[in-house]
Image (cartoon, rainbow, N blue to C red):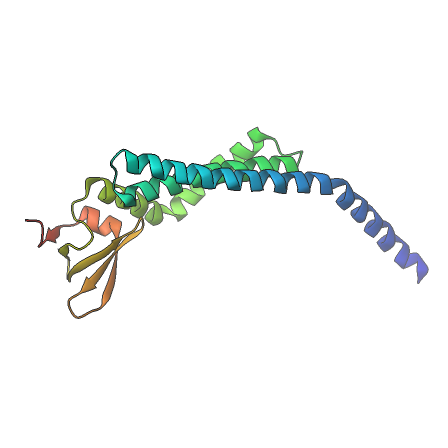
Length: 178
């Protein structure tokens, strides 16, 4: 019985030793990620303030601020991963991201399409919050224009969520435009 327990104890000891050796890297990675998290918040608020000072609508400023924050946060995740896993180089990480980026791009095609359409709607402003629009078989008042979808309240007090790609590519009648 003791001869079967000995390899398990040896394996547990080596696992514990490797965990203790890697704890400083994990702690440093978490500290770096926290710094990038804080920096992302500061950058997000700064970009929003700059966009609003430049005369951009609040929605556009919010979207650009969030995008800048996500870029900084993604960079922080990459830096923290290379610190926690020292064998992971930046070249191998970007190579893996490149290959998986194609798969992610196909998987999230509709989400990216709605995101870009939402940005274009916020920039070109064919309609605004409070306008009454008709899109396909839906008619009502625009309550909110988000990055992914536009929220419409129908005249019988129902909420319709219309993907922005549908609004950007199809006809929209703005009843309150003039």
